[in-house]
Amino acid sequence: MGRLVTVSAAQLGPIGREEKRAAVVRRLLHLMEGAKAAGADLVVYPELALTSFFPRWVIDDPAERARFYETAMPGPETQPLFDAARRLGIGFFLGYAEKAEEGGWYNSSVLVDKTGTIIGKYRKVHLPGTSDPVPGAVQQLERRYFDPGNLGFPVFRAFDGIVGMCLCNDRRWPETYRVMALQGVELVLLGYNTPAHLASMPQHDRFRMFHNHLPMQAGAYQNTTFVVGVAKAGLEEGEDLIGGTCIIAPTGEIVAEAKTLGDELVTATIDLDEVRDCRAVNFDFALYRRPDQYRLITERAGAVPPTD
Ligand code: ING
Image (cartoon, rainbow, N blue to C red):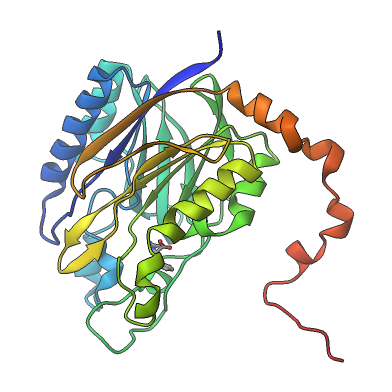
């Protein structure tokens, strides 16, 4: 009998700019109750799951911008989530915009156990887009509204395994999974807000879902870990966001996937012991990896071609 964990990926449909936190939390609670009814030990919400994806707008008024951040987690408006987790006996991952007590603004997530206690926090490392507005109506201003994550890629003993977190663009970078895999991660939880159209590269629109699943499947396979990727989806304030919420096995196969662009639970029971079997096939890190030959990965940010 393996280490069975039932996970519910809780995809969210659009969240309006003026949608009240309490209304969003009611949607999250409804999904949490559905996850519990499906037998889930853990429910995974998207990135920035409490608000509309506000980096799509230029927001110069500091008070208006502050509206989108949480000054405490839990705070008064999110406390019901923690209370429900304790009452139902289910854990959760929640993505949110964090105004840090020590200063700084982060695109963050928390991992919460079945008693409603925060096990760990993550702050998004890879911030896409621009610091300044670009021509056009739809922006990607995460580098304007968030500081780079400063907590690394921690992993936590939870849900009978080793669990890690990342957020959206992080899933496109192999280093994300590898740093967690070097700490023994068996289950990576992530949320995303990914536009279906990039004005700067319309010819890549046809790759959008392929480039969503590919890095998560590769990350799962190359690091022998489960990956749960959860979308904020649908037409949100005029911007099409992709769905594709999924649960991926350490073989790289997608074992469950969302069918809609709205609030939808995608649930699967996974056996964390499958990680050990996949590692045995090819990925015995200690035996096969050659860090002495990989130095450039940590020493160099941008590519430097040969001079000759
Ligand atoms: N969103 C997008 C993502 O990485 C993006 C940004 C979209 C980058 C498409 C490249 C191509 O999924 C966030 N929030 O990171």
